[in-house]
Length: 79
Image 1: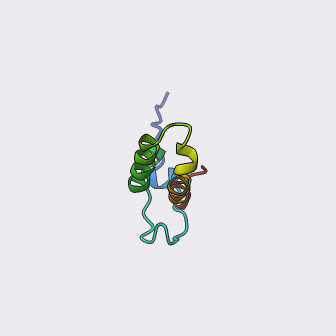
Image 2: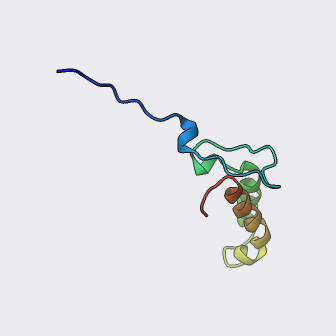
Image 3: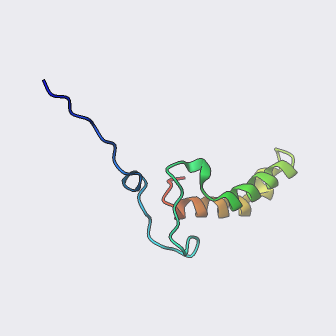
């Protein structure tokens, strides 16, 4: 009986490269983790939501949230 070792696919295959766009001009992609992507817009979004009362934050932070969503989509995440 022989033993066959299974190998995992390289990381580049599990994280597809989206086409270049203005929000991601270098064509950079994060690891496969959504939590690591777009740290700048994520920080701006979090700061905005912490700055305002929860009842006001969605309307006050809509533009910051949309920028973060656009950045995430530029990396190929479906958000």
